[in-house]
Amino acid sequence: MHRIQELAAGIIARVEEGRTLTEALGSIQRSETLTPGERGALQDIAYGSLRNLGQLRFILRALVPKPLPAVDVERLLLVALYQLIHTRAAPYAVVDQAVTLAQDLAAGRLKGLVNGVLRNFLRNKDQLLADAQADNEARYNHPRWWVQKVRAAYPTRWTDILEKSNRHPPMTLRINRRHGTAASYVEALQASGRGAKALGDYAVKLDAPCNVRDLPGFAEGRVSVQDFGAQQAALRLDIADGMRVLDACAAPGGKSGHLLELADIQLTALDIDATRLERVAENLARLQLTATLAAADAAKPDSWWDGVPFDRILADVPCSASGVVRRNPDIKWLRRPDDFAALGQQQAAMVDALWPLLAKGGKLLYATCSIMPEENQQQLDAFLQRHLDARLAGSEQLLPSADHDGFYYALLEKA
Image (cartoon, one colour):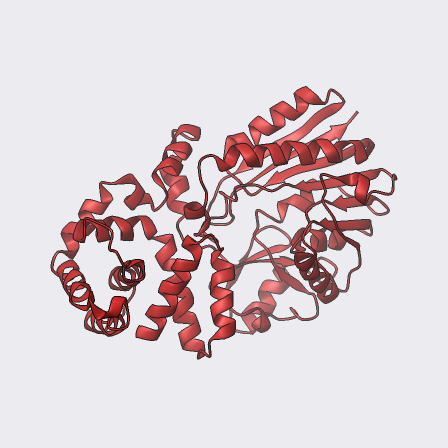
């Protein structure tokens, strides 16, 4: 167990240095030889520790009021506290293994402190957990400024939004309508021993997550993993056969694949990151679909646009990702309050650059995976003031729910 504790603490360290949880976990899983059980345990502890970091930090400070000089010991204590609070691991084993690991940290000077802190927690567990409930950052496991921001934006729903943003996300599938329906795929899943329910005609939510290799027809392109909220993007763009369509921020390719499943279109899939664009190519190859791929900056069309207008544009702009923190719990701890001003400038610059590329009578879908108004409704209002030839055909803020993550969509039509 102490090896998993060490690796999990290392992941927290990398996230604190600015790397994403996906990058940090993937790097360790590639570099370490782990059994399937160890991989699962490491993923659970890494995600769980970051998902509950507000609570863990509060309790640690209650036990040790001042930060320790050895930050690696602090991270070890956070991991051990997560195990003691949120897993079924035997408390004596968690404490014993943490103390063993502490021998190799800070020259072993804090071994006794680790032992004392964890045993003190076990003696006072109920009171410490109750105290944490009285602190908003600890209770809702989001930074204090984030809690205040959501509360201001959604005064009657803020607690529900924060609580749902901290739950385990569902595993949702998009059924390739060229190969079947949600109903037929639920039957195939049931035949393979997996429970699921349909969310509409071409979406399915699994009762329990599984490896994609175990999904019937996954390798043949019959089904893809995609959140139900994310699936709304392609559906709202109102495409038809023969249209010239731009997916302006395409990676990793879920929305591109969905667009091509919906109609026979001429799709240009654009992304600024050439490495991430490779994921788009891989996903389209599995689906046996084709598109024109280009590694370029959507906000600088002079470097890549051929001058022929698009009938439809999907502008999935860079954002805070505040609507998908339950899948990426590191985001809420990596974001800073002043990030939103910079993101807002990027969003406005990108959609302004893309608007001239849209044919008259064409439609552009402004999309984010954010729940913050300054990235969504406020951006929409400002865009409509800047572009008098734009008409709003519809908009909706999706908030995190049992069936989907948080997204915002605004469909704009060019006069």
